[in-house]
Length: 319
Image (cartoon, rainbow, N blue to C red; front, side, top):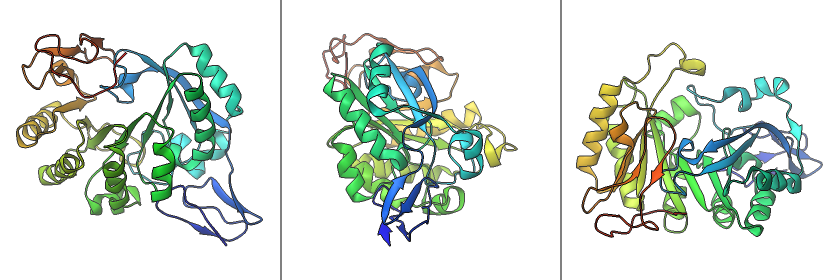
């Protein structure tokens, strides 16, 4: 029996067994990633789509995914590249790590993003690509559910420049809607926030999440020292395709409440048409420092990360 240390499930696998993620298998005593190098999705995105609002704002990032996820979220936006029953329909194209680094170079973007699915379940491939990109002067981004083992948290902190981590709800929500657990995600955020660029996303489902539940998320993020929190609208998907989208009105009420309650300096609305909720304002003088429309683009008006009005230094990594 061998134990996988990629995520907090820490699956112990007999020879021939596959872990919860559906892509980590014990082959003659060695746990291997079945989908290693097989790219199922690739694009060049605005970095704001990750979403990252304080990491190279206004830039684009070379984004890709391999297959697999260790959660089973009922509202998954990318089920076709996440869950085992879809694996036969998304075989992917084999791209060795060196070639993936070359693809990033040709994209002429300043960063590469491991995204769309759950990169933690193919972090062996991620590590090779991230190391190669950094060696050539690039930045690395990981968009993730944050459900890491302690070993994986340390491993990833060494090669990832910016994380966007989902904190989805309370413990009951994780059990019923994600088939996962909340504790390891909070632990990862606490460990990474002092060391890396970290932004957190919470997709809120009207009628399922309560305001008290969202307050509890905010309290954990404030305690962890998180500076950027995206509270995002739900849209129907996967097993929740029948459920109405979160309304702009309810999202706005929640956002205003969280901004009043917490000292987290930058709280944004995700998937919202209300442009005011996307603007980065100086915490000291309220000058608009990064201007955004409702589409995923940004105009960075800072002076090397400082407010153009009063000179206050903003949290983030700027061009």
